[in-house]
Image (cartoon, rainbow, N blue to C red):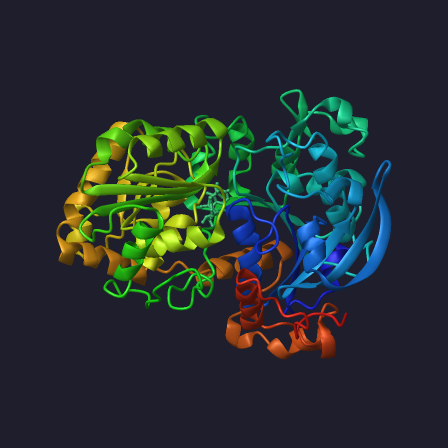
Length: 546
Ligand code: ADP
Ligand code: GLC
């Protein structure tokens, strides 16, 4: 334990700086944004106060209420930034305002032509460098107990701390997806503000380049990934993406903690995207949604048709090509498919072509639509997840909660969160979906056939839906696991919630809103829901005065 940690009261709240490149409801390209946006409210209940450090994209700057400039700094050679502090949608944020790096519209990683922004290395080195300075207590009077560095974009945080050699908060590096590693040419070492001796196998060097995630995995106090099965898979050459050796050497510090979803946001009774609201588990109440959805997509409105859904990034990871190949085989007059997705241009085109070929059976929305992403879960009978690998996956969690039965590859978090409808599971009434392996067209078609057969037995199908509705998809226990891990890293005693004194949170936090009141978990959630509906209150009671 270093000086940094000793000064804090062990029974007090833990202050975590979460460092990320996206966060719902401001900027989201996938599940990372969802997790970064929904975990803080759950952690608060466990006595963990999260401040999130984000790049100052236009959407983040626009959402920030009453921002206060807390520091100006030059984190990297030639890069000047202002650090802003404020609240947005109930979240406490630190935002890096650096117009030439971050004030760009659109995707946080990609230019409008779909290629990576050419300066992504500097942009996310800047994010990590600022995080490291905050971890050292050098910035704006805020000093976290622990840093949670998400994915490669925050990966250099641990490296900066290592080469600075000053007391600082420890780093927990999370892996949401090992396929994205942030690799940049060695010529950028100086631009990234790293010393020449950092470029070794025991440093940031990764197969002849600078590896942001590799550095994160090497220097972190602990490594978390988003499911226990993925934690095992990435230690194998098949799924380790070149980092399995390093992960095996750090196996004792690596764990899988499943993701949860915000169950207030994902509630079919109050979800503004759901046309016919129904209670979780009400398999009859959800039926009108299917009919309306079929109409919305120009498909025959027939309750007996087995309606499949896919909501996903359209990429090789998600196995969309595997699905596209078997479309002619699986779609008949009793089976329809609706796709909501965007990504790989070739896959988008292939699906659009198939939709033209089978207009009465396949409909596509190529693009990103938060509304349709919710509506499909309330409407389709089954959700398809033919992923080649899946660190956790969130859509299957939303699906079971909404009564949409998942048909998924037996990989990563899908294997951990879905109970296959085999005979034993059906007999014990615990099955929640269908798992298949190996991941290919043949087994996917087989699983769809298996599901369609059960769909024609309404009582058994309703049983699957009800089991899914009972499955705990919330952050609750997962947030407890994170809190336990943080306490262990900090050498703090485990405390039960009965012992956790909430009033101390109110008194001591320097990050409170007006009147010293810290937003409650419920307040944060309400603000997020309002944000989803596009109705964030200008005078958010938890925000700083403007
Ligand atoms: P990943 O992060 O690998 O894309 P996840 O399942 O963890 O996969 O998270 C994906 C998130 O993005 C979910 O919230 C899902 O509903 C959403 N999503 C993906 N594609 C779309 C889309 N085209 N429109 C709306 N939401 C989408
Ligand atoms: C990644 C993974 C996905 C996971 C998400 C959030 O994008 O692909 O499986 O659910 O991160 O952790």
